[in-house]
Amino acid sequence: MKKEIINLDAVVDRTEVPTLKFDGEVLESIFGEKDLWPSWVADMDFQTSQKIQHALCQRVGHGIYGYEGSSNALSVAVSAWYGKRHKWQLNPDHILFSPRTLSSISALITLFSEEGEGVIIQPPVFYDFKMIINANKRRLVKNPLNLESEVYQMDFDHLETVAADPNNNLLILCNPHNPIGRVWPKEDLSKLSEICIENNVFIITDEIHGDVTYRCNYTPLASISHEASENCATCISPIKSFNLAGVANSMIVIDDNEKRSTCENWFNRLEVNRNNVFATSAMLAAYTDGEPWLDQVIEYLEQNIETLRNYLQQLIPSVKIIEPEGTYLIWLDFRELGFDVKRLETFLAQEAKIAGNPGHWFGREGAGFARINIACPRSILVKALENLEKAVSRLARSE
Ligand SMILES: Cc1ncc(COP(=O)(O)O)c(C=O)c1O
Image (tube, rainbow, N blue to C red; front, side, top):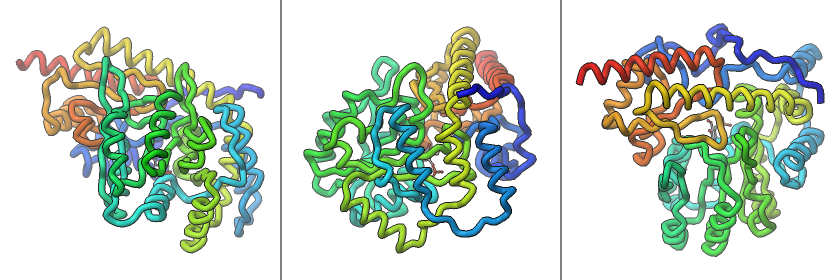
């Protein structure tokens, strides 16, 4: 496919349109300041592929935006994408569309567990999992990850214990794992799946970051075996990889026929069974023509990570990077600064001018860390690092 010319160094003013990440009032209410590097929302500061922009313009130009039936062409394109890029032969008929990934996860929790039952998560992990478990009146059950020689690992012994509790019937997996950037290896996925199958724990696997990985392949849980695929619901979406969070729909793939039809009936009952016409156009263009753009973006992100790594090593050695295998969310280790969670929060926003995500937002297991988002032009990243360096140097001088 022909490479499109893209300039990821271009700084596009996102305040020209309503943008959560850059909204001054929101920044002030969360971080106490407006004039910060907005790095807290997981979207990119890059314009999406021209192929997608063109498809959207064409759809807008048609001028009629009436009801649309379900798009078989889109399901087939999604299946082809996963077959080629991730070696997962997913059945297009097993894809259900939903408005958002979090809507999918909430529906799956509602349908496949009862109030008061436990849902297992592996913190530090995307904070909305906790929020959605609580909102559904389920019990949060933690199987915390362990940091071993700077690599996060799942705790399978503890998982066996919590999975054995008959009140815990669901587990939410995050692969690749937001915020730590781990792309779970096949052996870990097999082990996790086996433990869950043995204990009747159904897995909701959130794989929406799966397209962005660095020098390693992401393995969809459902691709590892027939048994694994029958015991999970996989949430996928192009929103992260193609920067379409404001336009695209999300998808759930469920191979278990009974569970899929339960879920489909639920979406029919809620009447969330009509695609948005712009979502269909954008998603179809992404999955059919977007690959060369994505590959260039991944290359640029890798260079941003290298810039970040070198800058920290040379100029801010007290802040360490947890090497990401995937996602553009980078987990930084601030523990050497010796701050408690409140002090780290104020240090980041008020002194370093970074509107990032303090690690404890992802569970107390994240205390001492913070997540930043490096999907931005390199000049912006370097400026943010300069501010961080100044803030850390001021600390040293004031000691
Ligand atoms: C792992 C993960 N799941 C879900 C979401 C939210 O997806 P959606 O906006 O489709 O609900 C995010 C957004 O950051 C995420 O990182």
